[in-house]
Length: 114
Image 1 (cartoon, rainbow, N blue to C red):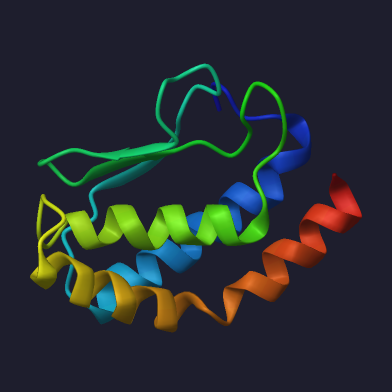
Image 2: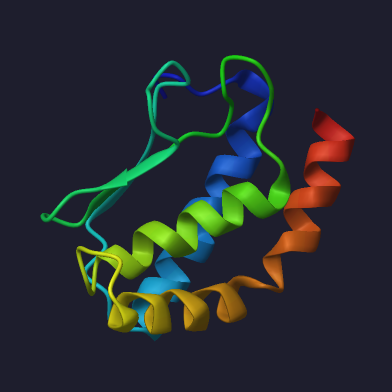
C-alpha cells in the first residue's frame, strides 16, 4: 500500500479492523480507510463520501498509540458530523471510549516493531 512503512502492515490491518467494528457499531458510513502521506500538512482527514485517510508516521517521528487511536475516533466522528460541534464532540467521546481497549495493542505493537 502506498505510503505504508513495511513495519506498519500489521498495525494498518488492525486499524482497518477496529475502524470497521466501530463504524458498524455506531452505524457510520465508512467507505474506505487509507494511509495518508507522511508529508501531508494534516494528520488525518475525512471526506463526505466516507473515505478516511490516517497518517501513521510523520516526517519527524512515528505517531504514538494514543495519537493513532484518537485520529481514528476523530475522523469516524466526522462521518456523523462534518464539523466540531457539541454533537460531533459527543460522538467523538463515545468513539474514544469504544476504542480505548485498542490503545494497549497499538502501544505493544509499536514497542515490538518500531
